[in-house]
Length: 75
View (tube, rainbow, N blue to C red):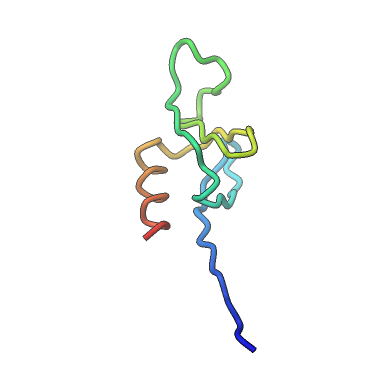
């Protein structure tokens, strides 16, 4: 019998309340920095992370930081 193991590396981000949230890099579809027109992102958030299920997260990390973490997790 062959056993196949698959490892999923999660990226830990921080919500605006400081809580940690683990995100599967394969489920991230887009990153958007806050803008004057976008009132959905509150002040402490530095990036909106969009997921494959249509939900999004407002996180304290900048979009550049999130992008770097996602790329490192996929290596």
